Image (cartoon, rainbow, N blue to C red; front, top):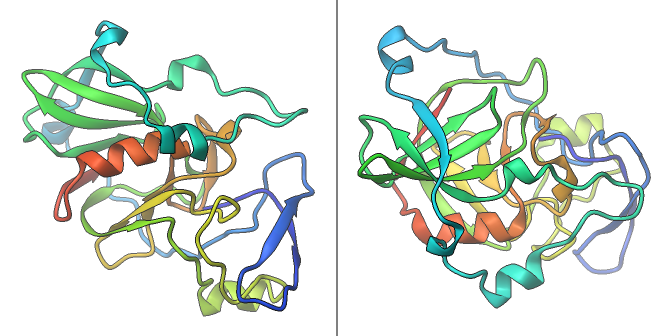
Length: 228
């Protein structure tokens, strides 16, 4: 995951605060991953063929108050998210069971399979060049407003980072996190919604806070996650 460069202010408590300083998107939060990309077989590829035909928007549930509160719109000087990355229900042909998450890295979409050739589609931020990966994981843990503890490798590169940041609106992991297997990869929220639809992370999948809250409520621990 790579977040915009931020200046960390040392506080007497364990919670760190920070502010935006870089206009380009660089990285407060940059995990060091060593995974090797696994190319998809032709057999796998033929299963994931979404048909981009939106269902009526009225079929989607209204945004909950917590989702509205968690959402931080683009700040002045930041581009708004492309509307095509808004959550929507679409036709989606797949052999995977309902409840499976399929991440289309090149298109920057996450699909939650519903069955009957339908899926919920969300816009996401993905790994920057050199940090892409592919494979199959399972959701091993779920956390609301997760804390963040930088790993030792990151602290060696960025000794200015906080040793621990408690969960909250300023935490770069956002409102929810779904951990993928025993890896450092996560599907998580973001307080930088303008980065959705871009390749900016070090391998994690980021979503808008209101979208990750919605997905979190639908996904169970043990759910299959396919990254292609």
